[in-house]
Structures are given as structure tokens and as C-alpha cells.
Length: 321
Ligand code: 3EB
Image 1 (cartoon, rainbow, N blue to C red):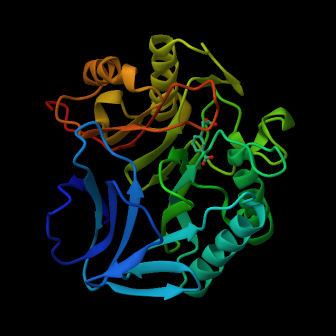
Image 2 (cartoon, helix red, strand yellow):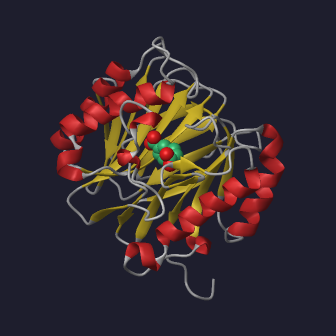
């Protein structure tokens, strides 16, 4: 198995650690520290002292580098992180970095990517062609998926979100041939089928990916079909986003045993405006299980009209919990 947790930045790691993502005040390319791939992202949480997301599985773990990528794996799972230096056009460098990533999962024989995160600086700004940075990034990512990956393996759950650092950072998890199921949401157009008005190439991700009994929920916002709902209304956007998550993980959409919102944990709530933090915290606390671990990150979101986005990991809780 593989598990993630949110820890204090100064917490020391014991065996079986595959990765450490540090959400704090510095950013840069991933490095290997004490044998553990470490990616620093400039994204403070509300507490302002930062936190680390730690991915841990069975020992032994081997780590290494491949071109500009940093990775670690045990017998079952691969973690990989990459970085694209700040640029006024990201398409080609993104295509290259993701192409390298797909070559790595092939070479190391972890062909099933089940969760990705993408952190994009100035995400709603423009590149040198006047194209929105997010759309520029999506173009390179889509070509890499088309040419090097998706035809064989499908697109995984993902998050594509703003960050305060320079350069695009990304990380992902992959496994061997074990049962991985990519899931769409019947309330939302698959992102990879968004019409051209959202950019020259559609975003490459699934709404969720199930690995055994665990469902990784992609970044989810106030989008029905392919359209943003309730521009400018935080409360209403929250309700649509949460309705999307509830529907995605429910029995109807999965056509199998479903999960409830109270079974979502390891939650990240991304919010655009500082002034919305108190409200967002109230809404999250009223929505999720009291024991759920939630982090709030103030960043820009991939559509300029989105105010909030939510991701998490669903797994079955005992009925009495
Ligand atoms: C959306 O539904 C909101 O580009 O990897 C959510 C999850 C979003 C992942 C990505 C973007 C991505 O379109 C944005």
C-alpha cells in the first residue's frame, strides 16, 4: 500500500518514504535529500508556517534522477517530480518534461500513473503569444499525453493549480499493472473533451482514479458540463464543487460501492482571495468529517472566474466513524 499524510515541516521521516512535498516559502527544482525526493512549493497554508506532504510505503526504496526528473520507488509504487524553469512560453518544455516522465514510467515498468499534481506560476497571466499560461501548459501536456502515453493507459486524476514560485513544478505517482480505474463525473464534460474556447488543447486529466479501495479525487471546481457556474459567488461555487465531488464518489456515478463526503480525507482547499479564508474554512468544516485533515492554500485557479477548488482522497470508513 501507499499512504500520504500532512506533517510538520521539521518532522523527520523514517523508512519507506517515497517523497516529501514541502508547502512553504521557497520553491525550486526537486532534489534528493537523505535518499528522499523533496519538492519545495511556494504555497503557504493558512497557518503560515507551512507543512509537508509525505508519501510512504514499504521499504526498501531506491531513488534516482532521469534528465531533470527526480524519482523514488519501492516494489509497488513510483514517485516522480519535475520542474520547468520560468518561461514566457511553456508548450515545448512541458511536452519535453512530460515526455521524459512517460519514458521513465515505461523504462522502470510502472506504466499506470494514478495521480498527478501540476503547479503553474502566473497561471492566469499571458505567455509571449498572448495565450493564458494555463492554456500554454495544457498544450504541451496534451501533446505529450497524445504521443507518448494516453492511448495506452488513459489519463489520471490530477490537479492543475497556481503557485507563487517561479517555474512549473509537477509530481505524480504510478504503479505496476494493478487495478487502476480512471473515473469521469456524469455532471461534468470530461476535461480532455472541453471545447476549444478554453484553449487550443484540452486539459489532460480524469476526474478521479481508483486504486483498490482508494479513490483519488482530482481538483474539483464549480464547473457543470464545461461551464463555470456562479462567477463571483463563493458560497454557490462551493456548493457546486462539493456537489461534483459527492456525485463523483457516489454509488450512482461509480456503478459500484460508493463513498460519502465524510469518507474524504487528505483534503486540500485552494482559494483565490485572502478575504474568503474564514468562509472557506467554515464551509469545509461543515462539509467534511471532523477528523479529516484539511489544508487551505491561497493560490490562483486555472480559470480566472473560479474562486475555490477542492481535492482529496476517499476511502471507506467504518459505519460507526
Ligand atoms: C476543471 O475542472 C478545473 O489541468 O490538471 C482541475 C483538475 C482543473 C486538474 C489540470 C485542472 C486540472 O477544469 C481545473
